Length: 152
Image (tube, rainbow, N blue to C red; front, side, top):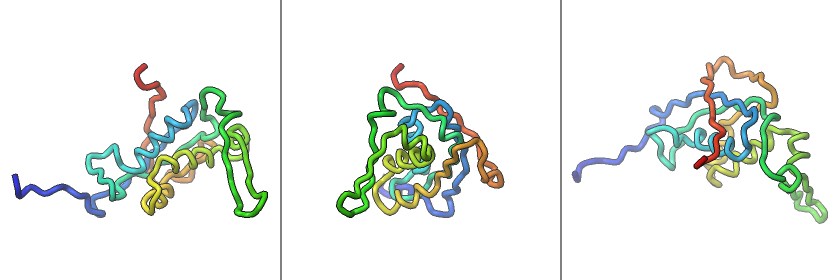
């Protein structure tokens, strides 16, 4: 038992696959957590916390996501320029009208590690508002995420 070694994936063994997710009628938080899980590689048996073993994710129909409750009016996003009076505020409804893909990107980024690896992993998600995307050459595999509530 003493001579067994822990497995650690090598960079050559970590082949990234391209996956497509349709965001139509998906709940924002549940969609973002599933995308973050795929980006990290937690769905693979070769997962290691300090290695990038995840896949590329293409999200289509970003403008068709759903939210529950009163989040459209109550959820706020803030940007601060660093100057006095430079605080900008918008709610989720305004953000979805402006650019729905950026709302999904912020939700996914919040579920990734806050370090160098998280900042590099966020570049592996490609989000588009329509159903068209320019990544057909990568032969992406379509995956279907269930929108069922946990425990229901």
